[in-house]
Picture 1 (cartoon, rainbow, N blue to C red):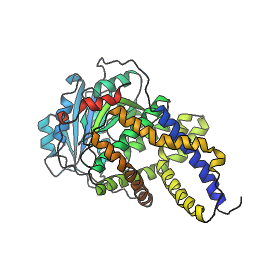
Picture 2 (picture 1 turned 90 degrees about the vertical axis):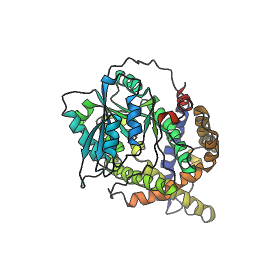
Picture 3 (picture 1 turned 180 degrees about the vertical axis):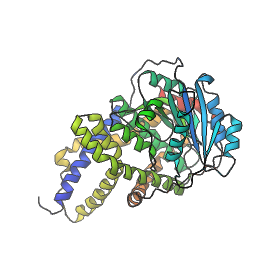
Picture 4 (picture 1 turned 30 degrees about the vertical axis):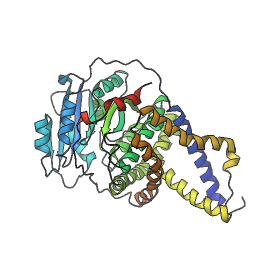
Length: 418
């Protein structure tokens, strides 16, 4: 070693190479799908849970949407948790056809607490359901969502995440780039991991969980990212989170950079804390059992740390170009040709995804601004790391309702063709 910093930077470069190859392989795998047989015979019963805090503007459209799904009415009920609401959420949701439960608790605040509270109330009912479905109040759901989840349950899967789509991708450049990010993750992460037999992670909405899973393992996930926390909790027990590529939920993306940063800061805080809790557990259990799927969970939960590490390395590499402070071994680990292929791939794969899903023309302009969105994660992640122990929940405010007929189902549905 020629420099003192080599003690730090050489291991750092090895980690960067490992993650780079990992992401590239997933991206390649996520570019296509296998043809699968689907069982659309309705069989499973669902308790649909919607967590709503002052959502009078949007919750009514979601409940109406859910009431008209292509699934027998007698096989699902819609429950709305009106969590610490001070507006007309209860009235709007009730009039739309939901079974509304009011919850008031100023100490245990947040979606995780509301979900756990509702799970307990549903469990106490005389009627027993096969699975829970969880949505955010601003969502809209594809008519065949329940049929798709029923199919996955019939395949023996127990924890399933649906396709996270966007209902307002052209509202602003922030909503557009946010939508692009979700589309990339859907294909180049969720679908790829599912195809490889690995476990992905729940995404907060569009989630399907067998009721037996909640009974056997409990909920008790109350961090700012309760979805990731629950996924990692189950993974330590060897339970896989699966992916339903055709079960589409349309999520409202924020339209301003300030709102985007505030929302992502909450995610970063929760993910850092989740990583701190679960990386040691996943490593210990994975090594002890030899379970690759559990060890792979480390890649899932450590992504915010990798972003910090790569940011530090990028800054040091610029310094190293003018004043050598460490030994660059990246091209010794992998030849220039391989790095070139990966570099081309990181621009080519997103284009393939956008072409496959037939996005509106406006999205191609937003794609030019996509790097700004990606780099904005850096300050958000840094602040999230230092605020990871702050558990104060920040509510995303929704200001307009969008009906299902306003969402271009045909265009969005095309993304799921083989």
